[in-house]
Image 1 (cartoon, rainbow, N blue to C red):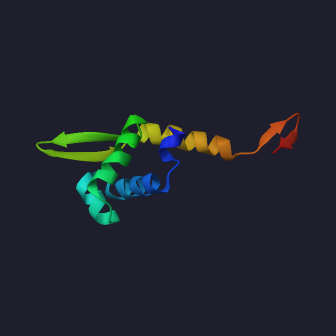
Image 2: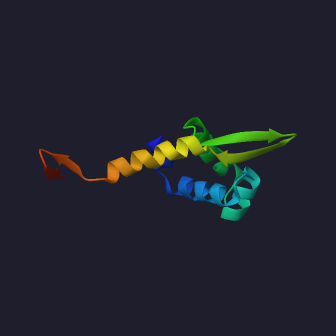
Length: 92
């Protein structure tokens, strides 16, 4: 899951999805001035990690953030960012 968000472009895509709540790949490509295929590649990585989900309506696909996975991801990052203590002493 961490490797999926260890990419500046994917973080920008997540930010765009979060600000729109739900969005399609064409709109992401337009808003970010990217090729559609490049966006789809990044979306596939985020979907495989479970960070975003897809909703299909007729011939359109819309993406939204999986809130439960995002909550877990934030908890992991927070834990990794916090100082580690061993025997009362800060390590690292």
